Length: 369
Image 1 (cartoon, rainbow, N blue to C red):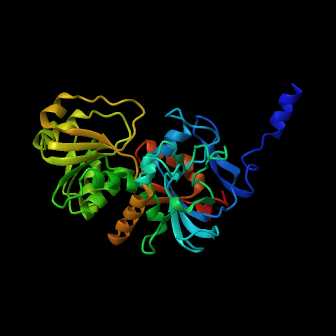
Image 2: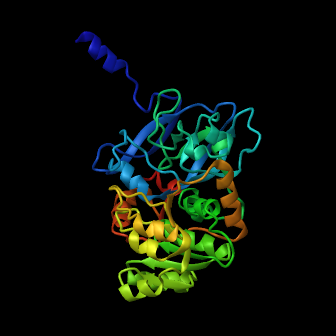
Image 3: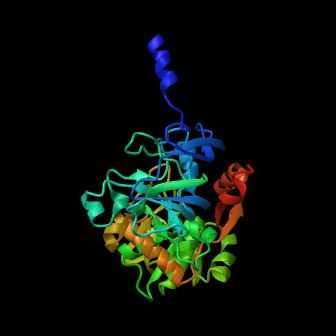
């Protein structure tokens, strides 16, 4: 009993595990409710970049992780994998960044760098990937995300943000942007004149439309919500809007699309999407549902069609995406919020009451909160 107590007393708190103090907002249990949280980050290593977090996007997966919907969360958890800011310190061997640079971190902060995926610039598929938050780092401590005032990671996992991109609007591109850009490139759905469907017009879907239009594609937004038509057609300049609950519209659009980026993070039928594809067409799902999806094989076989998946991109492709966004003036449409609005914002995300991405003003509101 005495030894047990001593062991508990000797166990350091998140605030004491590392020398650099940090503050953020964390969930402590499956309620997913976030509140102020003190922790610490490591010293700046020789190849590390440390930066002050200015903005951080709120992704639907942050909510899943805060509530342990996928059964992988470890508490306390500081979400946030769309964080941008300004470099405050660099290690002595850092070559690509300097103090004052605008940078960002997406969904990962390290990988083993030696596996086949890493060698081919696919760090996002590394079996030893270390995620920006909720992962165990090499030293045994947990990683904490961007709902916080500072971040440090190896320069390899830092993205440079071009000067012409506003940081608040660029933040969601580090998850939502690369999640939709990468499958367009990999699955060949990036050729001018191709017809691409985008299923769901939320945080991922609206940037998918922007990237597709910049690539010269014909874009149809597919949605269950008729009130999304104006945003799709007038604001995002989609070529068509397809109400998936209207059987006549769905039948008229059968066999017209080269591919579909399916962004809906919920259980949804895949067969109606498959029927929209031309022969050799592809549905690429990037929205993660909590429950398994029903996949009918018959329509796949008859049309030599494909249902595939995709998850963000490697660091080289993520930088490519950010540079492409800067070239074409692509940013996310955002609602900037103070950090003490987070719990309300998450409730609104679940209710689909956001156009189109919440972004936390970390710099100006974290201390006051």
